[in-house]
Length: 275
Image (cartoon, rainbow, N blue to C red; front, side, top):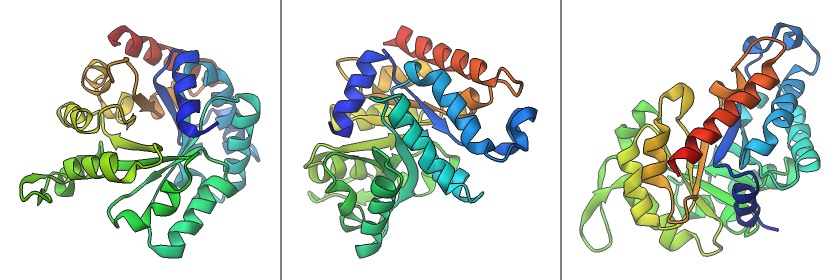
């Protein structure tokens, strides 16, 4: 079963549009885990096990593992999710995008080395830089479009000329290009930040039913009601609303996993009230 089918089933089975970002920061771990020899894996595993029936996806952030030499923990974590919680897809947050054979190796890294079901990608080197990911029809290609960070406006709002000679924002051009040109295998998604609800509505109009990964709720201050109202599809889904720190670090005590579950359930319920 491919990523899109798995995602659709997770939306329905868990009645959830919540994606939990797995961004381990050992300094914020509970004291009893902080100095444990396999702390990163143990912390993330316990979060996963506590929240798996509340989410539609997990999204481990590769730099949070690689910076600490914990690539093995990342691989074991993804394998654990697949083994213990089959049907919950894993998006590797790596933001890859490079030319030629390098892109092909990055695709192998994400899908073959780590076993991810999808990966985040930077489209700004053009189609050839992401083609190896697009070619993996059973995997998800999650392309940056209108990101949630304050500096997004520096480039993504620039006016560019389209093929017909008209002008539109760069993020609008990316949305249209991905939806109409790059999605031949039906495996593309776009990243649009919760902190820009007007742009989220704009992208939804451009791309139709294409799924949107929406970071920026919780710690970054994105509004859940605005995200759902502006980003959902006609069926009331089409979104992966991502939260990391607000769920991971809901408690720094030994009850951290239970607190994470409560935070994930609270976000799921808040989203569903708006659907």
